[in-house]
Amino acid sequence: APSAHRERLLPFTLPDPNLGGGPRAFLKRSVARLTRWQTLPLLRQLNEVRVEHHERLAALEARSQELKQAFDRVDREAEELADQHLRTSQLAASLEAVKQTLDQRLDDLRGGLSWLNHLRAEDRAELTSALARIRAGAEPGAAASGEAAGTDCPAHLDAFYEAHQERFRGSREFVRRRLEIYLPQVQSVAGADHPVVDLGPGRGEWLALLRDRGIAAYGVDVNSSFVAGAAEIGLDVRHQDAVEHLRSLPDGSLAAVTAFHLVEHLSPAALIELVDNALRALRPGGLLILETPNPLNLKVGAASFHLDPTHVRPIHPLFLEFVLENRGFAEVRTAMVNAPGEPPLEVAVSPDASSGTLSRVAELLNEAFFVGMDYAVVGRRADPSRETAGSLEAGHTEPAAGAGRQPPEPK
Image (cartoon, rainbow, N blue to C red; front, side, top):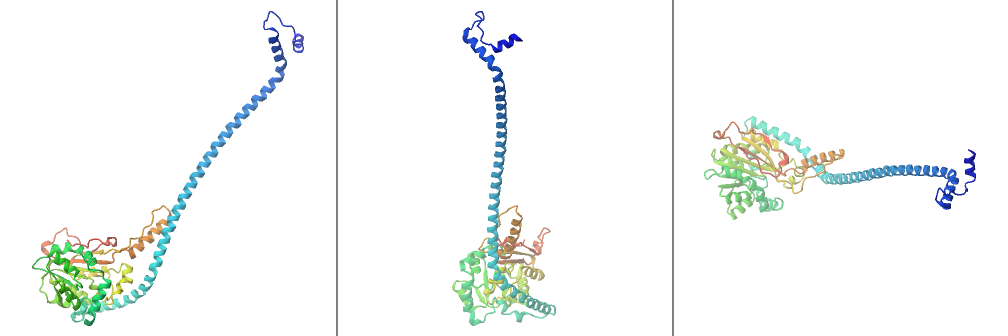
């Protein structure tokens, strides 16, 4: 130990020539031995600082990853919020469009509902009276005469009513295009020995279509201006009351009876008599085609229907269908025709609860305002030779969604 202490205190001993290295190496070793006890603690502290630095760097890296993940979540949530805001804006726009539509229609509804309520009691009373007369065996022909002609305008106003039709019915070409949908059915029953009679042909658009297809047909109208106008374009239109004319025909003499926008001019008693006489005058398998304004379209029932002052009242499609069935027609069918020019309302599909409400509102508005503006009821006089076990049941009403499609075709 003394020698070691001595060596620590007196490191500068003479170099041993036998060890080699010379004075320089000896000096380095001596300095290293002298400073080792001072540098070792510093090295330990430096190592601890280095370890702590690495630990802090690792913690910072972990924190950086956490922050990056948090920022990613914030970005995703921001995108979701932006999408939700866009959907909300779209729904708000749809709701505003529906609101504007409701505002536009509300005045029509207010004006029409009170009028319809007034007519309900009047209709019920008149129908009850007509049914009572029928049950009692009364002859309604006298009351029906004139009403069944197509208008109840006095004769001196025939030219006025003709001008009215020119103004509000639409152009001849427009009406022809609408009536073309009925041609296939009439062509299927027409024949030279059994003509088609059109009741209240007006300007003759339908008769002109039949003539162009080579189908034997003529019309009956009480409006002298319409009769004269038809003669000028080579159409056969007779100046006579519709019911009286049907009553005068032999049984089974017609292939089809058509009446476009006529029955709304009739009382219930006149309508029933027209249907009865049409059934008798048709040959077995012959067709009765009736087209009339559709009161299920509220814009028609509450507004445009009343442009014609000779209209008596709108006729519900179920009632007109019932009349044909009740009076003996077979295979009665009803379809909505002549769709409105405006497209139906649409609401964007969304899982949001408000979207379902808007869709339901749009559905109700479409049912009320965007169904066919007219409807057609078609019935056939029963033909025993055509009866089959697979015949469709009568009394089916086509859904309102069929607005604008082909009219029903009895089998």
